[in-house]
Length: 102
Image 1 (tube, rainbow, N blue to C red):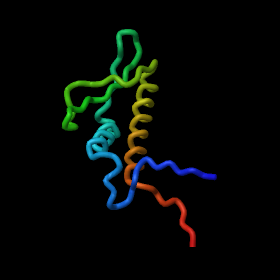
Image 2 (image 1 turned 180 degrees about the vertical axis):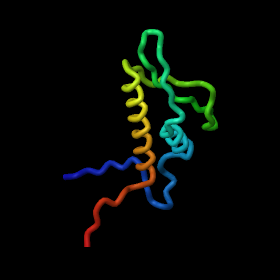
Image 3 (image 1 turned 45 degrees about the vertical axis):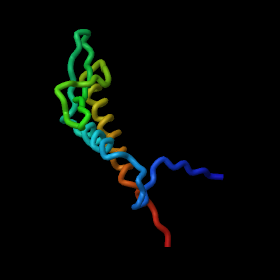
Image 4 (image 1 turned 135 degrees about the vertical axis):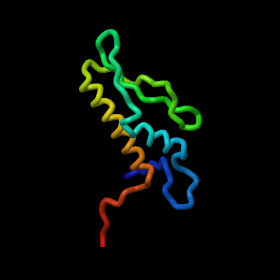
């Protein structure tokens, strides 16, 4: 027996789903220009994302996300985060038809 767990509704008249603020936040995090890498005194590299205020506007503050041993692995972590948020945005558009039958 198969069970289906529904998190979001994608019908046209639905009020469920992700909020517009959440969508804007995900779009912000999915843009690489909002990320940076800094080197810490111990030699590690820290990935940081620019912070957002209550109105989803960028601030001058940066939030630390991960620490990595090399700059290459730090950039790879940023790229993985960006892909994660892009997938979330794609999911929020609704179900994708992958196969139809006649």
